[in-house]
Image (cartoon, rainbow over all chains, first blue to last red; front, side, top):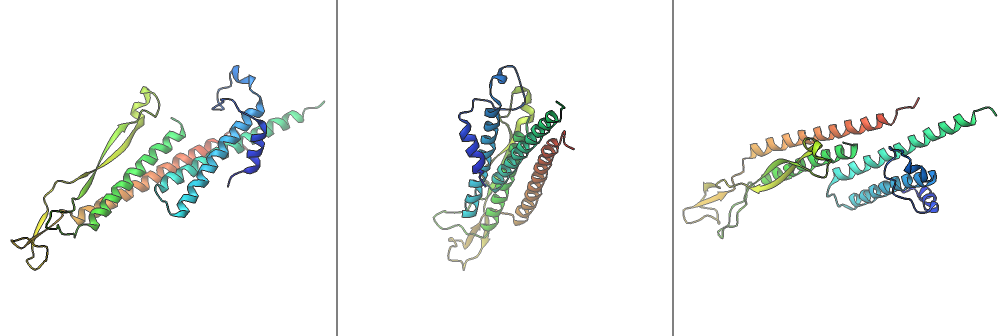
Length: 103
Length: 141
């Protein structure tokens, strides 16, 4: 379930700096480019999905050390993916609002 | 406390209940074993659970919110049950064999209560997850 296309986009953006959460937008983070923020978020989601994929394979092979830990990891991956989708929706709405402005 | 910490606390609860179930299952399975002549006997186990403040979960202000269950398995020190059975090949010179002091009824009750506690943990986790998903709907139509 790894998103190879998204990770290819993220890899093509290059290195991402240490932006760890989306909430505080201070003057310092304006220096970061928007594309690096997006690629960092995509990387984080891809890492979580990949980790839950590995856990699923281990359970399928019979190594059921902690089934509940695996299920919790899957739910966390799903939550971060939903967050990514909502961020994308907001950005698209803002873009469409801008494009509706009359010239 | 963000959602990852809530999920981790539920995970700790589930792990401790699983340990409880495992110990009860082990005790029930070994309840009919007989001690051998060289003293190899099954000691019934029990689970001791304590809330431990986990320093990984936030600052000192949140110390009360960061207690999570920590279990350890200790051996029960009760005396084995002596049964008079002279025909058993493992009987000692008085004809007694000793079974471990496992009360099957108590173990079954522990199994049931651990199951209910585990299900409650799962319900709590699902509630926290649906709260998070609902939060993501802020601003949507």
